[in-house]
Image (tube, rainbow, N blue to C red; front, side):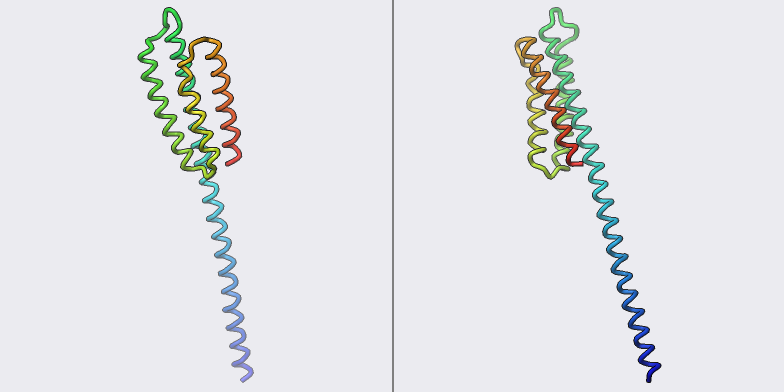
Length: 154
């Protein structure tokens, strides 16, 4: 009888040890998956935020060039061609904005990203060189501030 009880205790001990080992392994696997998911999201955010910042810089540069094409006498380049390029760059910036907005959970960052694009959109509609220079500074600082804010979400 003692042998049966000892065998039963040994079997129960083995089962309990196996169950505990399985639970710890499952927790380790879950933590590993959570870490990988978080790292993948971080990488996607990094890519989206940097792509958006690059698109903003290119769009801003094109609009500044358009301003000089419209106000320089004689213009160095056809303003219509630059305008078409600006439309294409705005589309690229909007696509990058949408991707960045989908990946961020922070509504303030999402709105700030849109506000920077909106401030750049009217850059070429200034009347004077002094006003252009002021808006150039504001938009450059806006992009820099957005990059700093996005960095906190990585």
